[in-house]
Image (cartoon, rainbow, N blue to C red):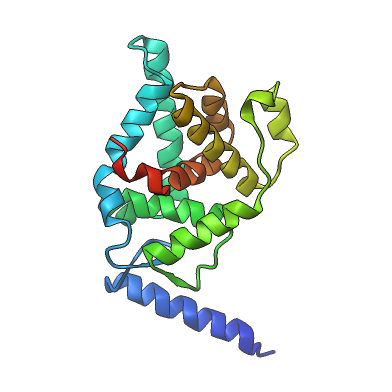
Length: 200
């Protein structure tokens, strides 16, 4: 039986796949206009290293092992939600694809940097907030949350609170290890904040 809506979706997917294959759009699963997140791409790795040093500043093997584990987790998620080509050319776009997946954006739309950022923060504003300091057992708390969007906002809130108070919060590493997709989505939101434009 012919389903016109299903056929339209498949035609649109094929069209966007072709646009990405010919370089008119960038991305692995989602489509972004060329040049999206190019400024963010240039500082992406530096910011990741800065945040990892902030949360695990020690030179000992313990902190180094945690840093490496988080990087491995992040890379695994990025390659699952995006593709190797996108990762090599612009890891910030690969991270945007993780955020798009977590926040359930349509892969049938073409996003500009502005439209994607606006949509992301509109979604964030609709989600509940918690004060991370008032959560006792974080692992137990996380078991009751099944929506990755809420976990992403929780991690985003942790990073924002830590930046304001100029401290590191060990709960961030727990979140990152237990929910790497949400960790990357929250991290990406943190990078896109206007206050982050001059993050060093």
